[in-house]
Image 1 (tube, helix red, strand yellow):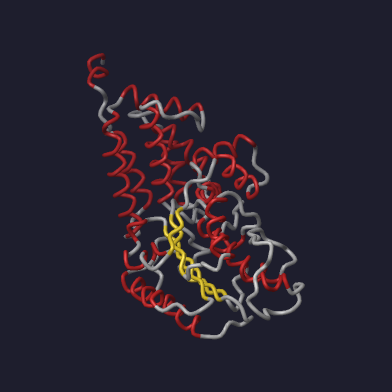
Image 2: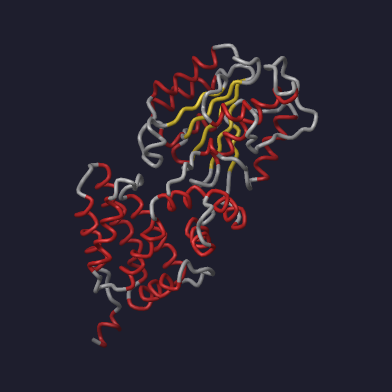
Length: 373
């Protein structure tokens, strides 16, 4: 089953209470900055926060007017709370979630629904559309809001176009800028924004988000998704959409059997990654290897408290006991570089997997093991 995991579809906002409180206090105390930079790890709910905040602000005055009339003024709700949850019978909420609200401008990659994890650049022309959007009168007499998801997909031309917009913000205009990598944000942009930093969600919050979105899976599968996502519901849902748990199991078996790797596991990996339904492509292999090697390294330092599976534990112990743990970063770097090259230049995926397996086979066995052979 494939889930629509676009943040605009979120029904219930979970977690990030502190971030919500900071934003809400600024809004009701008339100290709302015109531009908010939402920073933090990928998949933890930054874009969800932006869409929920946009929904709540655009719907606020309409709710005060009995959900029937358009905005008549900019008076604020006396309860001093913003409703971040989706209401099925609220026309504003529905229009925001369908991206049809006249006072909301979304800037994101082309075909984001078909390829939600690509690194395609957002055209500078789309960024410049915000300037035109803000130059017009509000369609419903209230706030105008723009969301850029994300700054990580802007080149220098797009960033410069955005900077021009941030320098002269119109009244009652709000911009949410989303970034998962601080190094992608120009200092000049950062200086013109209020930065709201997001941390990984608590395990209970992650678990609840996963359960709300994945209804028919067993508790065991949900438990595995929670651990493997490490506080990132977006990552958990992406893995669910792309057979991530099955792929991780086969990857685990490969590492458990080094250097005598079963060809069946290799064939299965190739089959999964070559499947057209896998929108993440070969990069999911990179993500899963990163997770596995990171957890193996942390296990060697006795930092792992929860196991994804007993097979994972045995495979990582096999690596720790029989190979030099210091070689793992180099192994990861080689695989990461090879995967990016394969993806960027659209090289043969099957051959890429075979080459990566050969790289894994070349892990150096500890000398004391060799002495016993």
